[in-house]
Image (cartoon, rainbow, N blue to C red):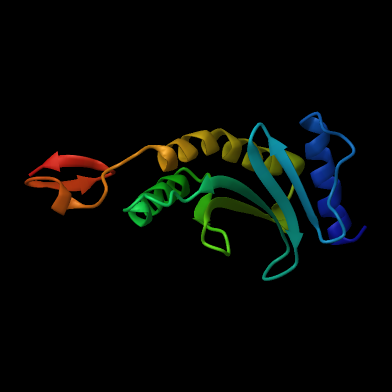
Length: 155
């Protein structure tokens, strides 16, 4: 069995466990699914290491949202500390995505399923943070205050 076939087998096992049997990677090594309104893409790649990656679409960056970079850095740190996912932007820079990976040498169905479930559990909270209106900018907009985690704090 080739390594790609092994990855395919594990992805199919996870799909069966989740009640969506019969699905697997396409010719490009990708599988996209929706869970509720959350788009998830699972992909096999050989470079830079052989791995199966899981990408979760966390939503669009609000057009009118200032301070989004600070928020994304905070969300990324919290997600990383919880070993959930890394947060970033899609190639166009318009959508927030989360991703995690399982190196092929560690790939087992329970590990991939755990990564997927953890990311899906975290997605609604992260989406909510992105959608919740916050201060329009930093401390200059808050009298005698500073901004910490999107909340004005009196100095």
